Image (cartoon, rainbow, N blue to C red; front, side, top):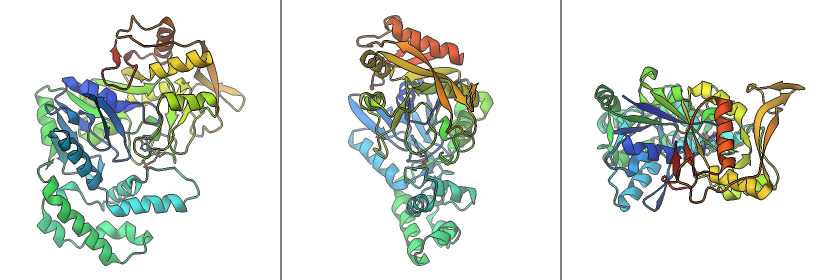
Length: 419
Ligand code: IMP
């Protein structure tokens, strides 16, 4: 009964969507487990580019059940737009939305912007209301998808509870907010009613019938609320155990955890990034790798691959195989600049360390240098890859002690070498 979890190894944007879509060709069920419309998963399939925020990357395959799990916070407008977009392309989404998933209200988005403006330490959030929506959930104040199913009961509620947190911060007459929530419920109940269900029943049956399940993580290891670079993190737990919670599958069922990474690192928003490049190499990685946010279009910060963090991520997630995207991009960098660096340790307070300290803004990377680069043009198998590319990949394997299973050499899901 294979249950595969797909996680981001660094700060997101590693290409989880591409790997998840590719892996889903053999799956019965794919579950999006955490986060909300802050995620941006790009899938290039059937000559079309899909930019997904809430829907699992399997959604393009009508024969796979795509689930949005209880751990996700849902912006109804954005989800509706995504569904409509697929329908226009002739795809009928095979979609099941957990009745336990929380709803992101317009107010949450306002609060996200407001709080970010007021705070002295900026996180650089995506402004999608994620933090306030999860805060409401922790306060046990959320409106959930199940509230759309029983409008009669929901509309009779005063919504006083759902507005408690907002009341403290937003200077707006309560009646406007109540009307807004009522409108949201009215407008969306009919649209979503056929998609909302108890997804646990589906998942339990699938587990009992030995079906193949993929849990698609969103965001990534170092954006994890508990294990990332707090406070420069998101408000959910994107690591593998958080993905299990968000989906509704116990850890003993998991057979594989795929850690997705790139041949280099990137980060959006604020926070530590020891191997960040501020020179023309960093700019060139951004250009060649098209490193601009799918959700916010922000240019991403780019830098060399950090294996200290990769190894730490292996333990945090129990990664069993690595998927490395942009091996073509980093090869070109090596060709153009004559070298590629990989961080193998940090220097902190005159000491060499190989762990990730909680306070790591002052960590100075210690690099191993690879001379030259490579081109992956025309390669379809591992054996066909140039020696320099193989040396790079095998060094990552040796350092992390984890096999590299998928090697991405282009944007299309089929531009993947499997080992
Ligand atoms: P939030 O999730 O919008 O609250 O943003 C918190 C931090 O996580 C910010 O630094 C964002 O840029 C980052 N972040 C959130 N979602 C993603 C993602 O899907 N990819 C990369 N960074 C993300």
